[in-house]
Amino acid sequence: MDASVQRPKTDRRQLQQIIAGLSEGVILIEPDQSIRWANQAALDMHGASSIEELGRNVSEYRQRFQLRYRNNHRIEPGSYPIDRVVAGESFSDVLVEVAPAGQAEPRWVHRVRSLVITDTDGEPDCLVLILHDATEWASAEERFEKTFGANPAPAVICRLSDLRFIKVNRGFVEMTGYTREQVIGRSVYELDVLENASQKELAVERLTAGQTIPQMEALLRLADSESKLVIVAGQPIDLADEPCMLFTFMDLEPRRKAEQALRRSEEQFANAFRMAPIPTIVYARDSLRLLEANQAFLDATGFAAEELVGHTLEESTFWDAEDAHAKIEQMLATSGNLRNVEFKVRTRAGLAVDCLISAESVPIHGDDCVLMVFQDITERKRTELELLLAIEAVMQDASWFSRSILDKLRHIRSGTAPGKIDAAISDLTPRERDVLALICEGLADKEIATRLGVAPNTVRSRVSTLYAKLGLHSRSEAIIWAREHGLPAGGVASTRPAARASRRSS
Image (cartoon, rainbow, N blue to C red):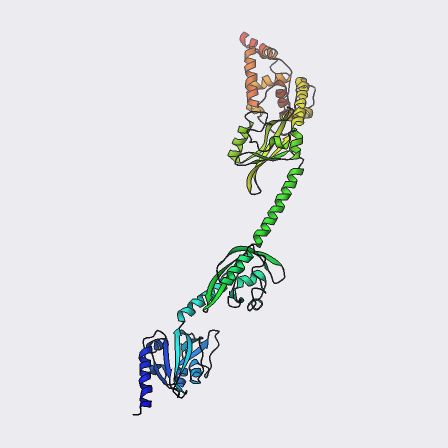
């Protein structure tokens, strides 16, 4: 045999021995399109146990396996990588999905490159397909794609080689109003995700170096030319073996609107507090230290703000009673508020003022506070006292008043509502009814004792029991009660002594 024929065969056996143990798959194809040899890795990547299962030639290979690109476009005959290498084409990093014929879903993902071995004359002598199993990588990438797309947190990915966006998720589209087509392919300079960032120089430096960009506030321009306050951060990742930067965002607009609303609310409260005509002060809830007093309180008490602010409830000098602070603290600790509790407040000039005090725990500027309101009732109490004294004086002799006038006087004096019945005539004993009837006639205790033929002490005891039953405190109240309940006066027990004498004589 000619040495020139024998040597290529020897070289090819050596080549097969070298590549047999490689982890990458290798398929050798003859220029006549017949499949000469494949190592075990290549067979495994096709689920085959022998070269015959791959196919004896390129045509049979196409019949037994269907290929498509990662974008789901099917590869037509003549465009298979094995066709391209037979045509003498050199290529690298062709990514294809491979499935046995008749199966809809791919089973493997191959990253393919070609190699053409020529003879001494430069003619193709052996054609080589080199396969890398990218199935696990593709599966991980698919999981990433699904996670990235479904993640509600807005995110975009830019390629570091040209700083152009290559991926955008639904969260970013919904937050900004851009379409996917308006983002993909644009550079970070056209769609500046770091605009007005609080540390923009650092962010640009880290982006250029492909390093992590820490969280920072920025203004993200939206599709409608408005802007949105966000927190942006960048994380370097590899995508399809290309260095990229993953930008994630957190929408701060709801927080900014809430803060603006809170500021407006606090400003409105501050204005209302200062302008309120009712004396009002604010204590810190935890320390009960006075924080602020409005002008109405300063005018009512005569104190200056600097004399009050900073002092605790106990240190405040405007309380008239020494134990006022202790009572208020106890009420706040028990129920958290006060409702129209009466206290005396002393002005700077020493004048005691009767006040109804209400207090409520409220948050102010994020702090727990106690809002305390004062209502001056000094004049009202003086008027009520004068009215009661007048009623007491008039009712010393009430026999000549009509029943309607007595009812009105009684209600004014006692503060009870008309029609309220505390007791009934039937609740009294006969003797108690007699005593009450004689009281209505205007008789004194001794006169009643004489009329009833009993000792004065007995009458006094009856009167005391009568008052207790009816909730009364004076003869005038007893007269009003009797008139109100229809008890007639006069003619009671006027003949009792004679009757007893008659019985003794018989």
